[in-house]
Length: 172
Image 1: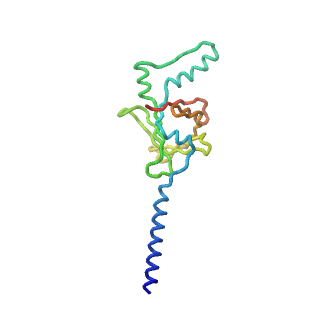
Image 2: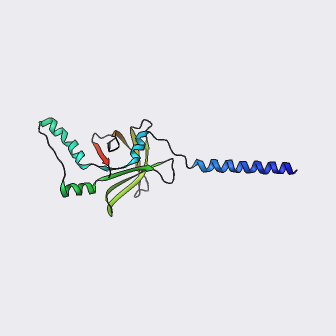
Image 3: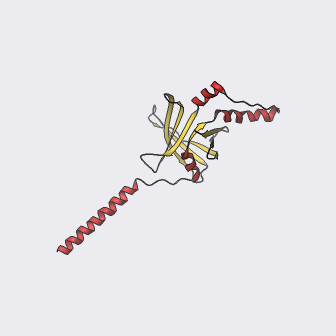
């Protein structure tokens, strides 16, 4: 009887340990993501006003043969940089199997931001961003972006259905 009781207690103890280990590890599994996703999360990305202005002026140069060199400098450049959008991609702090992002316009007290979730295609070329609409009380329609280029210092995105590229630089 004593041997039988010891065996049952030992079996129950091992079962409880096994279950507690499995249950505790279920919620903390990190979602797998391509290398491009890791690059997205490595930095915050600031909309590069001057790079986007220069990119838009290339069409004028090609058509007319006149080169335009548009660049915002001095106070105007600082104001434009201050008001520019910043994107921050990360793993969700509460649920490591999800990815969240923050889109912020402005800096400090004079800023507004939205948060949402994002996913990435298996090939690392497309991200889908989903935001919450607090006025409507539901999630907005997902928006797809093609990653045109991503390096350690530069991110170029193109929104699905548009032909304008948005150029971001690594935020200092």
